[in-house]
Amino acid sequence: MGAYTIAWMIVAAAAASGAGVLYYLLRNYANSLIRNLIVALSLAFFVVPAPLPNYPEQLAPAFVVCIFEAFFQIDGSPAVSLRILGISMLLAAVLVIAAHFALQRFAPKSVQK
Image 1 (cartoon, rainbow, N blue to C red):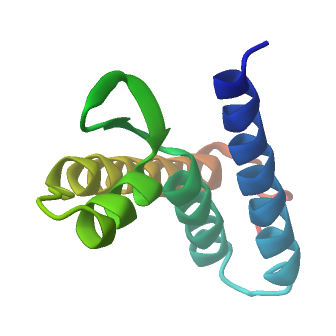
Image 2 (cartoon, helix red, strand yellow; image 1 turned 180 degrees about the horizontal axis):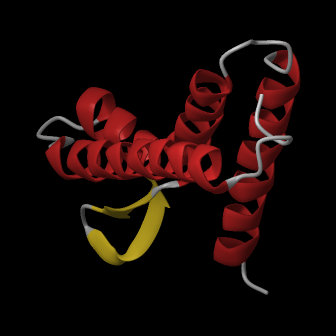
């Protein structure tokens, strides 16, 4: 197992832990759709990969690429990583909303809150 794989395992574990803690903190929130959206969007924000500008075969978390391209590169272009991040967060939101309404529609009445 290489350093690249280990780094992505650490990113995934940290993001999953953070999402779990966030879910735990919001457990008493009445609106489950909003709670699940917040948790899913935070998880997507930290885990979505984007290619590194000079190394297209290497991937890094999109928010990290965006920060480095925007603030630490002289001629940096964060547009690609921002686009990837935006599209993936939109997709995560659509999936959570679709799952929420599908579960409400098809779940037995005794399970619905």
